[in-house]
Image 1 (cartoon, rainbow, N blue to C red):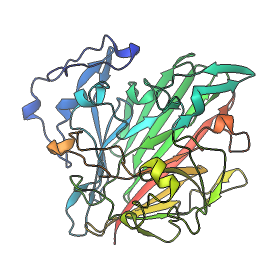
Image 2: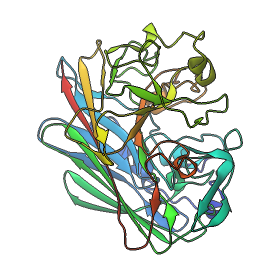
Image 3: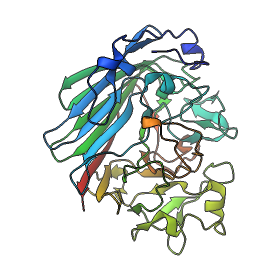
Length: 388
């Protein structure tokens, strides 16, 4: 594997060294067309590889322990053809090159998914300044968040992968030594089940999510705005022009934010007369899920769903979290060359990121993201696939 020019993933990876398998052309490809040898390398002295999960119903999920990233999800379409439904890269060099290919494709995001206002939090009475990497805010844990860390990978069986990360006290200025575990399981009913767990030795904030970019048609060379979206949420949290939540919770009824009745994204996404869509350049908003009540989320009820009329692939989302960020790929521009050499155009995908609300550390009335010693953080999301 040729080392990508400009490889630099924050200070932790300044001395990153790639060592790759020389027999890459002879490796057996995955169902999604990935060559595992292109992920077999070393980053910052830690081994990186591609893990392949599968069941007996023609579902395959490929994951790299670099950022605990979901690289591909293959499920049958309405014709029974294996279809990769997520965006990403087909080699580790592009994922690791945060200068030329900065991305959160498929990553397990931490310590804090989404934005924290001006990167400022107060923990145990102490004010802390976090890195500011997005309109003056701290986004996805900072410029070297967990999506650029190497997890310890342990494939438990054909269908389950456990990934562990040890994040030291002061990691991007977040307090506490944190051990985070991500468990991916492909179940017999074609569900990708994800469990996020964490413990700490000092009070901190935790908000993890998966950042997969879904295009259920299987053709990410085209915009995915014909996908039909449903969100089980009567309310959302508005943002200002810097994508920061204002602290308000507003009803979706009577606005383009309403997906309580499923409809295609293209029907409302272009309504720039609605300020929120103008600010976000489309959808990039947190929804307040109806499945979360009295401090507890019901992960047996559908929180959201997505459907492609082209492929017939239908995806349901289940979670115990209070919110879900809907991001419609507004900042994709055709400059990113992904798997199979495909350039991803604007709105080629939809992200459905289950989470605590953005900037929850500074919004005291919202579900708390604080974690103390002796407590265990637990977040669950399941993406269930079928054909309709």
